[in-house]
Length: 439
Image (cartoon, rainbow, N blue to C red):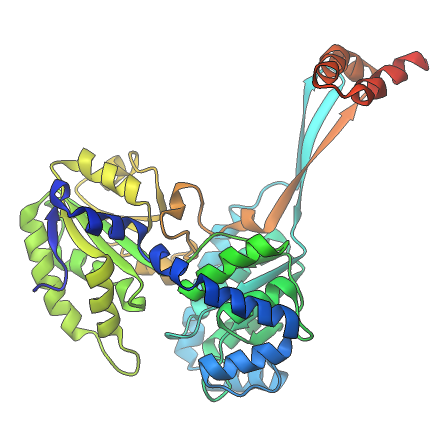
């Protein structure tokens, strides 16, 4: 049996189609009760619960939850210089891209004579960043979350990331934070980290907003704390997903290689190819079989992750034409979308739902994961239908302001008093009328 099946779009079994569309969101609902228990324990017992869960889930016995100065120094001394240069290059591009998103701090317009309206744009005060670590090292995520927050002007940035069994945090993640002058880093991962940032503990302060990706436990925790606490979240950035939209001009080797980018993250990830060519589909299927054998299974089981992910959430789907293919793409609403086709910019105009889009045969989604400059923290599980990639906008709030002189109040007088009377709020109208009676 092939690692990844081929279907014609109209012939996909209904259960399989539902599984493809829902992806890991199906698994998130299955663990909600366990996540609620973790959140409740952290809320009631604070640091004590964090230490217990860190020992249970990460195998690390942690006395000091906050990363100390000597740990930053040790990480800097051990990190290879090549990795440091890579982080610096990536940080440069990420900052340039996000600086371009920054809006003016205020604006105003005159909508009627004497009626001036506007907005002031101010940063959120404190933000909690989650950097995953259970299935590998993700210093790039630290850059992707911290840099737009800094560009927006956020004053307090706190980072939670899981420790290794020896109690240490990944060197590159610490160096990435240190590069950006962020020292509030805590050795806590999983749902317990999200709970700590949402409610606060003796060591980890409560924040106003939590951002960052993770697996199903992080996705479930973010969703639940946003309901049960005043903390805001960015969106559900859960297990990774990608979809490659290709026509018969695409190189099957490129398509197969890119298909495996996200499934190697974990068995709850997704990888799909949508094409107008059965010939390409068959070549991609054979190439995936070959490439997947080249993935390592030590020290992290990337091959097993990919095989399991494609078994659950993988497919090669053949459509009648590009219009039908794009319709499926918009309904699927993927985190990472690649368009490898003869005229990718023409197809781009028809795409409505995707977290981030990569165009052409030389734009694998991995460039966006690391160093192109676009953000890799993206909505998953069809979230791209209503959410955008993490950006400077996620770290600011917009407050309206109104100024009226006497002429402006006069111009609105009838509209305000008339609607106030209709809705049954006499004081609303009286507040306007009293100003004309006193002059």
